[in-house]
Length: 586
Ligand SMILES: [Zn+2]
Image (cartoon, rainbow, N blue to C red; front, side, top):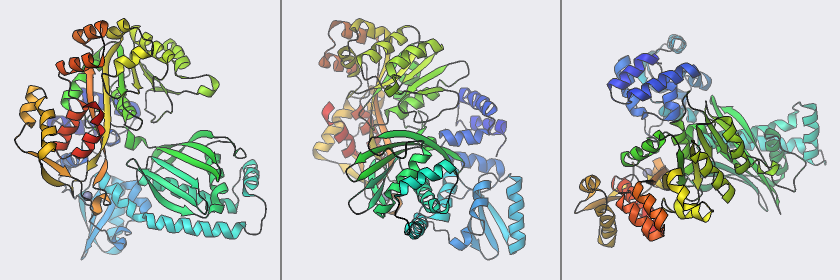
């Protein structure tokens, strides 16, 4: 990898980061003892295609990019074995005559060079080196074991399991208990271990957020949640259900013989050198126990504000708020709108040595180096409220509370903010102004709000349009009117930029690259309202919905709908989805 200092200089020179980020990166790299480049990948700080260009200038090595249509023949791929390819971050992608084309992430990796020299000599080949992005590398590595191969492995394991379990009439679960006591692995456990680990691996590879393993009448169904939608990945013989559930329970330290009540736990595994956490919840159904597993992949979920697609107009307000010495920053939106991800992005901005950050979460979704994160356990009386009371004794500067859902937590959060802490939390309301009536509902005295509340955010998610197949179209008729109305009420500079006679929007189509969905991943859109003297006046006089909305408009707040429409006009999301998500607000 490029030496840390050189890389930082190049990034500054190319205006990819500012001096503050540069200093922070160097410091973190020192503290964590990891290369700056690795930290950049982990946090999505700079788009990889931009980073690879800078590397190309430095190494004087050309860049090779890939699209999903590029097929790499297995015989070429396998010239470098998977283990070696993953360890040294390389991949063989083309063979022409006597030349083997190899993609590398770090061309200065001495061991990788030695391996390539060895392969060249042994196979009598010349090697041509190209720089590739980390994400291209990871995508190509998936070809070593496609889902089809994994499925085949699962089927083989099922066969082995069936053969082995035939002679016995004892229920499987009891045998697992015995195995566990001996803490050894006997042969018949192996196929189940294999099936479970393959399912887990596949969930991480495909960026699934959840795994559901559900007994049906005649099969055991395995579904993944991909980009918010559940998809059946696999169905297994029903007879495997007790063994698979038992295996997952062993991993997550749950009671194996307790099948009548729901249990929850978690475990961590290392896949592809990444630490991934899985949160497990079992649930008894009439057909047997069902298992839901949340995949907490910090490499997918952790984003910076830029990585989330927050625009300058919102970012400036958020950064102003973060710079304040105390007060509450509240993110709102329905379940699954990504508000926790946004809080984590804000939280990362505080993660400095001089600041003590403590969080109370349910669950802890991503572990962040340097933060003191704590998981609440309501069943033993450790909930958000009692946790908050303890936390203030830990001398925190910044407190994150997963959610404010009762009067007591609301009161404690306000109190913490008033006594000199920055408090980050989420709340269930429709929009940003809704925070104020909601807190008043929760018995917070209105006169406490101006001093304790600094920022209110709301957000929604829309599918990110697939660049490969989206189609441009002119918005006409009532759709044009709706767009124009929103754009016309934007603040002057944005209005000048986006207001047109003709509005172009993009429609999702579907192609091979996006699995015929028309979208790839999701993109949030936001609204951000800050506390001002005139908002304070409204709160103290008459914080009715109409008055608050009028005040937000006066403040020039870019609304959810406006931010969504801007993103639609830029071809990032579909206008239909933006309008549908914001319909109740118009
Ligand atoms: Zn597509």
